[in-house]
Image (cartoon, rainbow, N blue to C red; front, side, top):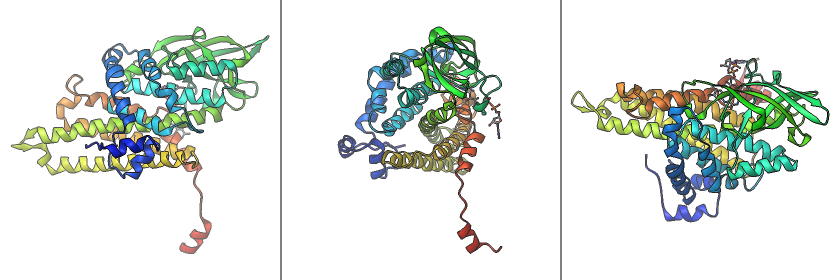
Length: 405
Ligand SMILES: Cc1cc2nc3c(=O)[nH]c(=O)nc-3n(C[C@H](O)[C@H](O)[C@H](O)COP(=O)(O)OP(=O)(O)OC[C@H]3O[C@@H](n4cnc5c(N)ncnc54)[C@H](O)[C@@H]3O)c2cc1C
C-alpha cells in the first residue's frame, strides 16, 4: 500500500484539519502529514517496544499512556471545538492499529476517548478537572466501568449502588470486564443512584482487581473483574443520578470512532502483509498471486477496506465541519468496520497457510484473535444495529408514489 507524502500535504496540514486534507487530496490511502509522521515515530520508539512483554504478561503498560500524554498528543486531541480534534483521534488510533498494538491501542483509546471525553464533557468540579488534567498529561490512567455479571448490553439494569452515607457517597459493587482495570488510577463507574444511573469517579484506593481475565486476544489490554468499594465526596459525582446512561452513550460514541480507526489501521497491516506474501510465496511453480482465487479475494477485501476508510474520513470531516455527531452514524461505522475486521484478518491469516496460525511466525494469528473482540467492545453488533435502526425514517410520500397500496 503506497503512502502519499509530499510537501504540499505537509504544508496544508498546518492550515486545515488532518482529515480535511486527506479528503481534499482524494487520496486512496492516508497521506503522511507531519502530524502522522510524528505520531508514527512516537509509537515506534516509545510504545511498540512495550508490547511483547505486555502481551506475554497480560499487563497493560502504563508507560504507553505516559509517553503519548507527555508528548502532548492527548491535549492536542482534545483541543478545539466541541468534539476536540477528531482528525487527531483518528490518526492516533489508525497508527496504533497499523503498528499492530492491539490491546495497548484499545487501552489508550478507552483512556483517551471514553474516559477523557466523559471527564471533559461532564466534569464541573475542581476534582473532576484535576483528574482530567492528569489524564490529558498521561500522568494517570483512566478507565470506564459499566459492565457487571448480569449487566452487559442492557446498562439500564446496572446494580452497583450509589448511596448517601452522611456527608459522603458510598459506591459499592463489582464490575465484570474493565480495561485496563488493574492499571487504572481512576475508574468512571456507572452505578445506580436514587434517581437512576449515575457516573462516579472512583480513585484506585476504592478499586480492587479480583480476577484478570484470560482473554483470547487483546492480552495487553488487561481486562479485569473489579471490586468497587469507595466513599467519595460530592465532587466525585461526575454525572448525577438519572443522566448516567446518556453520558455513557456519548463517551462510547468517541470510543467507537477510535475503535473503527484502530481496526482499519490494523487491516492495513494485515492486508499489506498478505499482499506481499501473495507475491513472495511460491506454490505450483509460481507466486500465490498468480492464483486468481487468492488474488481476487484479497482485491475484494482491499476494496471494502478502502470504502470503509473513506466512510470514516467523510464522517469525521463532516462532524469536524460542524455537522451533527450522530450516535447511529458512529454505531454504523463501528459495527461495519468491526465485522470487516474479523473477516479480513481471518482471510489474511488463511493466505499465510499454516504459518498464519502460529504465534511466532508473523502477526496474523494475533491480529485475528485481537480483532475478534471488536464486535463486542464499545457495544455489540446487535446494539450498534439497534442504534442504526432507531434512526430509520420512513418516507410515506415516496412509498405512495412507487408502491401500489
Ligand atoms: C476484552 C474485553 C474488554 C472489555 N472492556 C470493558 C471495559 O473496559 N468496560 C466495560 O464496562 N465493559 C467492558 N467489556 C464488556 C463489553 O462491553 C461487553 O462484553 C459487551 O457490551 C457485551 O455485553 P455482555 O458480554 O454482557 O453480553 P450480553 O449483553 O449478555 O449479550 C450476549 C449476546 O447477546 C446479544 N444481545 C444482547 N441483547 C440483545 C438484544 N436485545 N437483541 C439482540 N441481541 C442481543 C449481544 O449482542 C451478544 O452477542 C469488555 C469486554 C471484553 C471481552
